[in-house]
Length: 326
Picture (cartoon, rainbow, N blue to C red):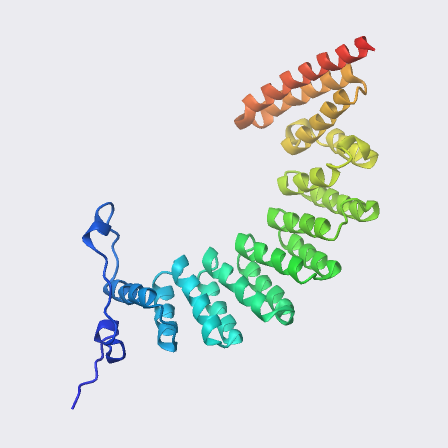
């Protein structure tokens, strides 16, 4: 009577007796030897053999799951799994449930998110809403998870997800953490995706939103960057309301409490004025004064602010030269 092996290793599994494992050679250990477990060496030795044989079968799918458990970032394993899935006609919904578990354990793994996108593409639009919900779940656990935000962008773009619903989701996330740059980035992506960047009414709404978050937290760099991005097409000085807003914030904030982002934003306005030859002399003087303030309030970037101060003077000279040439 044959004994049943209790070993978890493939080399002791009767179902794999027909496969000769390919173990790493000594030449592969020359540079830096990585400490790995016996089951790791065993599983990947059989995976190498499977690759050579080009076998695609249910037992290989199980082997691939073990390899992924041991090294979820291995690109070759995931790629071979995709080949097996398509050739074997596996249940893709089951694969999605499997991916849910893997991502919840390893949410910053690029390979698993790439694999998920592949499966979603095969299934189609029917899973779009489920993907948004899954991304939200991952984002709620870690609000700045790059992979989850990137996947949500891909879903929104691929399946033409309605704008209003996504803006509402983004707003909800901003109310949780108004400093979360990932949310502002997603919001700007949505505006671009739906061709709203030149929609004045929509941009005005977004500008007012950014201003509100800045009022609440003047040192919120993400909100300042978002405001700048919204104004980039027409220029900062083209929006009188924003200019009035930042000047009022400057005047009503005690000198020692002024945000470096506020000072830098107004300095950018001054540089734009010089470039547009709008009160160039006054603007250059104001810019240099602001950069002087910034050197005190943000000493880490002191050399940058000195450079910007020189830039203001250089721009002024060029502006005066253009005026003289006329």
